[in-house]
Length: 216
Image 1 (cartoon, rainbow, N blue to C red):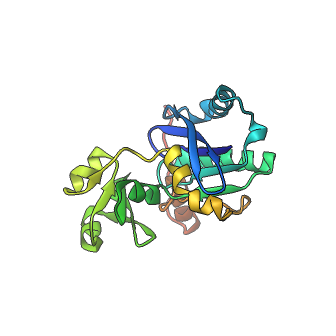
Image 2: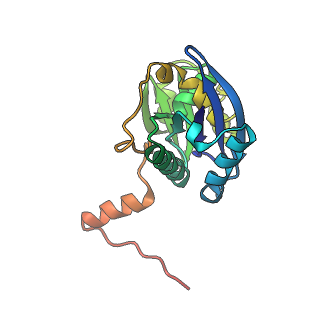
């Protein structure tokens, strides 16, 4: 039994699949409501396994989408996947949300809204943080997107549903069958952009004025 995890977007999902010698067959998928990943995660996994007559001990591999996207979502999904992998001595495999999106849209490039007028962009297996103008200058072909706001910024883009945990399991099939796993201890989130906390910390290290919040 394989477990897929994706908590990078406004809503998340977990999925179960079975792996034979040459194929991945989806068993079930369930959604996780946004902003409650941490509270739902373990209970949802146990519930999904129980529903299909399985236990944690029946899991053989975990596939996790490790970003880019919500910093909190990426961290929750990745840390939970790593904790399960270590506790159960399971191999772990991470996939890019942008790579999933491009595959789902059938395009060579993909973009996700990163806020602040910027987009996470993938083309030729490279991922960057760019403005819409920069993407238009670099884009060679059709763009895959999964958000209405991003589609409005790029007329002509292919709009598809957001990639899910089930999509991640199917996408990872070649690597799963080849046993091309990641190193659990060193695997990190694919953030593309550092969090505000990290940026402020770096500014502080350089002697920039400290940023403080007034508490009332």
